[in-house]
Length: 607
Image (cartoon, rainbow, N blue to C red; front, side, top):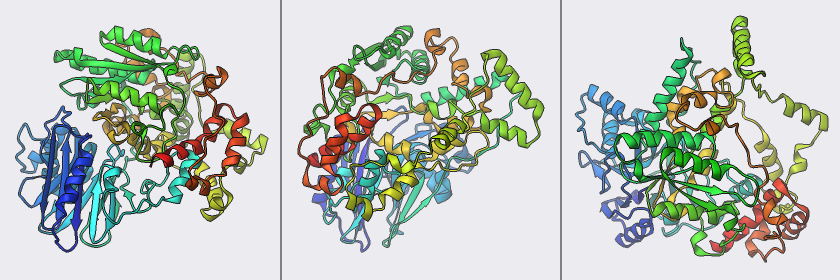
């Protein structure tokens, strides 16, 4: 993914050319294909380009149609043909080889701020109007591309790279205690506008920011719509429409050159691999697709590596396998190559970095199977309640009867009844699971117990069919997770793409009746009939049979103790002796949670 950064001044002063060069140097790891700096009175930009395709890209940025409004950013659009058609209907003459950047500029010229909601894809960018001296910053709905900003010394700074923001004068490295608190409570910050640094903010997904010399104004410009249920005449129509949308999502993301996929033995990544291979084969480039997987054997009995290899052979593509056992927890965390922009709790970080380095030697784009679980493992209960409220008793009987005849069981309700009943029986106090190793003064000063209870609350979403899926997709968890796949975290110029998070596909799935189509991924299984080996297509969702850290502890290859001395700053957040005491007996998920302060300690030492 390309890198960009810039600075805009309120008084029209000339940007510091040395600072712009330093920004460009800090972005170079992102974009090996071109480096550029640009400035005019009151604004200066730096850009490095990663050519990834499949659409034409502007190698030089900022770019403009009229010399007044300039675009700088990292952009990959979906639905280019549809956007182009709508623009031409509004008297915008669009060349066939128009770049994504040009399409955005034409959209802005045609509709201004109201046109932002028409843009689909993965992007973050700025539009600078040099005459009106106004800057508009935009981030995509799912938060696939990061955007950071800060103000200092009469200048507004921005970038898609957090470390570049820290090059700017006057911006401190003081930590944001609420971000640290959220990290220790749940491993990521629920406030999408915060970063680990108090002075640097993050633009939330689906939001735009306007800066015109005063305080920046941030507003939401788009959201996943809540639409009515879809009712098609024939069951096969659901399958056919899903197949078409999935193919469009993959096609819009598949480069003409080499590409890669992180392949497991599950339905999601194998389905994407099958569609990508089909598309690549039609253009004679299927040999350019390669699979990468992690094999958990011999740590424990696991079929992922076996089934991923089966799928790769079925498709006729190469596969590269990394043994999970080859990397110990926290291995290499003291090395600069594993430094991350913000804290991360992943003891196996070295393993994921190794995979990305392997991909970077062959491709600039890697596909993931992220996003398949949210809607496709849906809830039956909201669907039945929706029908019940409309007195559709016959429909309820037919839906349940057909499902029972086919699967010999009723569909999973997932109404939260069992969990609620267990909580009622056990009379468990939610605060009893509050981490005991947090420093008491830090807890009291930042109200972490109240924050803990707040984070346990399930948001109330009135989606007619898929309330939990809609809440998950609308939360900030996806953007937080996907930022860890960014080049600033992986250290290599590789762009991660997730077709199952395509907005066109999500909008369709959120309208599909959960029973039967979203029960245990029924729709995906039917769509992939004949494309996947039956052993994979019919395989039930299979979680890891053991907690990831337990095999290393049980085999005595690794132990969390003794703990190294922490940096002094950590003691303001964590009672280190209590961390050690907790880890003495911790196993499974308790061990994983108890290691959050250890991950934070490593990060603070490297920062």
